Length: 632
Image 1 (cartoon, rainbow, N blue to C red):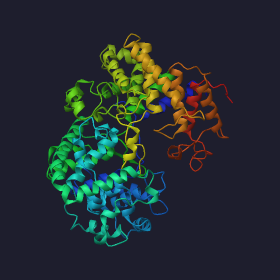
Image 2: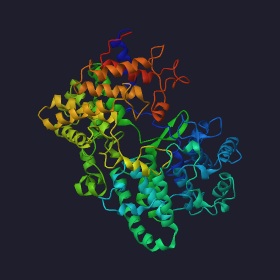
Image 3: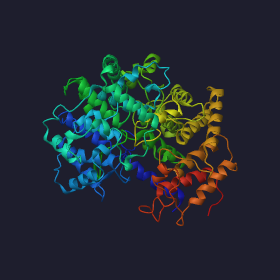
Image 4: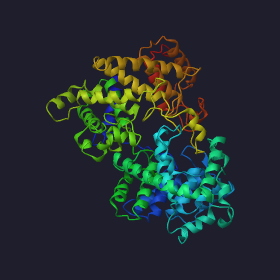
């Protein structure tokens, strides 16, 4: 079999998996802390079938059960050792889905929880959901004051400067905390009352909640609360409870709650009620339910419930909630670039035309349909400034146009996908005869504008926005289970995708913003050199991990002008070759991510003699781009 035959066979296989609208769908599940938030929200809203029906609930229970581990617990994600964070939320979710407390799996889960000292030892995000359900008192949760939004924008620590995922989670969290929302039937609901006994090692009414705020099991304490933040939380606890502060607090809180509600409404409309991610999706929905006075027929609540399905995925292990509403645009952009490099775009004309159509429709706020939606009015400078949004028009998302949040690397890869399709005769003929919509040069320029404006001062690119805050913000990280979440950092992956898109665009359109584009490319090249590790590798933040980062690092440098013989490229090649396993492959797992060190034997348990196809593919992409001469 020739290489060309193998490539054609692979593309033919993937053409059969392409959806009717042109994208490739895939499972983006894994975390165990997402779906329980949806289930708790569904439960406290009265279990509306419009949100989750009986069949979906049964499939969710199956998913949670099959991922319970031998020690009785659940991990934070499916490859994680058991944690109190994952176990508490998964256990509660199963109970709310109707699983009996005497079920053998529930007894194992309960034993795990109680062996760790009960749920006062879980992390703050789990405690938040317990407070919502009425299985923990709000005094046991540290303050999330919504009045922080009233600070002037110039204030050094303003929530508008936080990384958008962090910002958009703590926005509804602050609203629900400030409203002291609790399930209105908590005091009579038999499941909730039973959970108050099952989850604790002591009598619920005897627990000194204020003293438990900082309790945390070692297994959950991935990112210990810094001393500065612990001091601030203790001060805020006095602010929340001491009588002397109540007149001021009550006065400003109502304005903080009002702005939070307004901001959440803007986020809902800008994202067509999908919201930026699964955590704030369900919190925004619960907040909308509260603002509607518990009216399930309120239009905002209905719109929210109708979009819960965007996050659900059914697979062989049951129904799960994904970490996003999919990775459709990201996967499709890479797919067409791979097909182009194989020289097969016009041998699969229908596949290529469907991808063009998908990318055309998915470019954010760039079509007649999207510009006629409520989201478009928020693109004005006034609204972007008010709701802390970067320019969106012209970008591409990770998932869908409806999601509405452009990302630097997704914009870069989407732009590159369109530019390779400009070379497809079948696609361009279809554009000329009117069977496909055109993507004008001005729309490509809009994408370039998004990329240029997203470049940080260090020369790299972050995710959704420029870095707005400071490194010391991490000293105020209130989450024990997530590190480096307070600001948006420049990443190797985002930087390579953005940088190479500019390089390719400049080749096609050398007269557009020439000096800005060339300056941006040069700054990006310097950024890549600055973040290369001493061992020659690049750390990949959005996949596992060093093979991935090395591919982005090498391609970024080569495309921006480095030669394969440059010291940086040769150093990375030596790193990759040193990690090749005896069977010719490469393998590492997620432990590379949190250890920030290559997991030499990370895939021993589930790879092919310790090697994985994906890691090997990434390593070979990097070595091929570097024209590595070690062909053995």
